[in-house]
Image 1 (tube, rainbow, N blue to C red):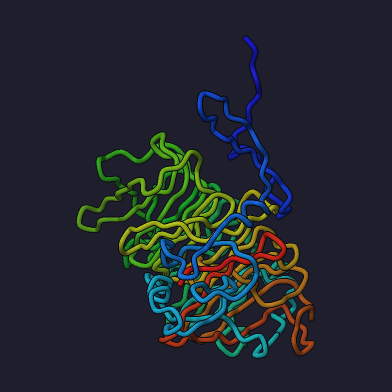
Image 2 (image 1 turned 30 degrees about the vertical axis):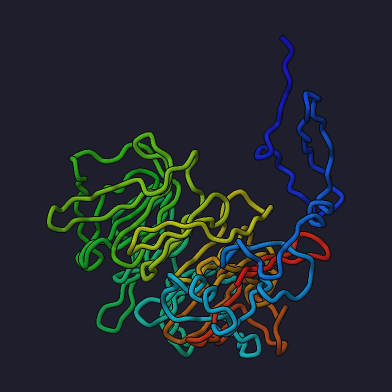
Length: 441
């Protein structure tokens, strides 16, 4: 029996390059007993044959179409522009539904301020803890630096920091050679040191109660840690049995729920976990199954949303309601896994590579994407500081991209607020010359 190596469309790795002369196969049915026939049709012919009534009847509000470049009475171009609700009331309601936290619309490029953190060359990460900024650098002897709101250095840890920094409301953690260290703040004084705990391939740390933090690593979480008393307690699971298997990513969220991505109890996907203080036990449930584990899982202890996907953020989970929906995806070819990511409410930062400005940010929960501030050769992390309404960008030292030729490895930009009667159109990059994407009003 002869065999053929048929390839399904979903198995074709190379994406369409926007060539309108590219052809597809179509079939014309036969009539009156005569056989049908195969024909070829180009993308250009399909677009030319598409007829849109002036009133766009039958097309739902929020639908996105690729149309010849122009102005349409019933459509708004997907260019990320800000519009007044009155321009498209139904679309405004749709695009603004589910948005949480302050309505930041973007950043002011002209408000840029650059500074240099001590003698550090590359700044790898920034987060906020107890009203102070905590930075991770690659410079020996000062790999963890704490500053106040004015930028004054108030504490430096001299040890090695081998992983990202993970913050709860009680401590900032990191791992070196599988040993866990913590930065704490008591009576106005910062201190850091070895917790006495060791984990393999630390993924994150989450707070599960006012007293206990939980280390997330390759296997099912097994130890609760109190950073004040430096004491520990074992983890009990509802049903009496810990989940079997392993996971590759973990993150916390607002409300003390936390999330794991991996293959647990023979099921792959994204899982939600929660600690029940009355039962002193952990529960786990599969929220989103998948054929393979999600490689991207980002959130924050103060975030009302968690974002996850394979290679890049594809889905958003609303923590309070448990609703999951697909977001606008950005496809990249730099890496098969996320290199850096941070999210809080509707703000998302992620980069598939720290070499050059290849990062993306979103201020509307992944409905649209844009580029972060222009920066130096390495853009390592972008953090949204809600309290000061500033966007903080860190990376390598230099003046590249500076609007006022300043030099530094830290840059701040003031955030712009979206008015209550405004909405932001989706931002979708064009894929074909002479055409743009438009969203139905």
